[in-house]
Length: 153
Ligand SMILES: [Zn+2]
Image 1: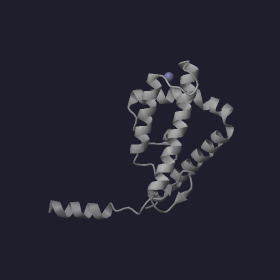
Image 2: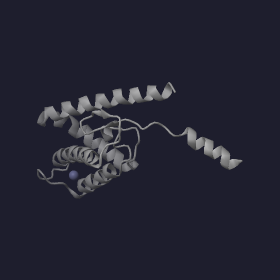
Image 3: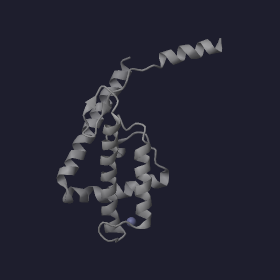
Image 4: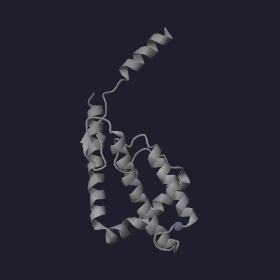
């Protein structure tokens, strides 16, 4: 009896495969290939690493291109989270992700990094920041679309 109920539940939970976003925020109706996922992770890690670099240089006064111990640890932590991310296929950036996989203390640290480095990235590399803003908008539109399809079922 109990088993039967469970079986029915499982059948009902079989959702259609979700569309995924590649490193450029382009939606596909298939999961990412391992190469695409890797490219996307690399891009996210290089963004985070750049931001931590700006923050460490400006706030911790470390030499350009170098990180203090605290920031090196934060970068390692963030990279590990990105590599382990299970929603990499459907999201664009950690900063616009709804699943908060960072421990609260690290989350606060990375938030400070972004607050400091975000506006400065704009001065150093406006093209990259614009790309980020556009990708984030795409992600929001994509999520909205996904949510409304789910709601209409
Ligand atoms: Zn630092």
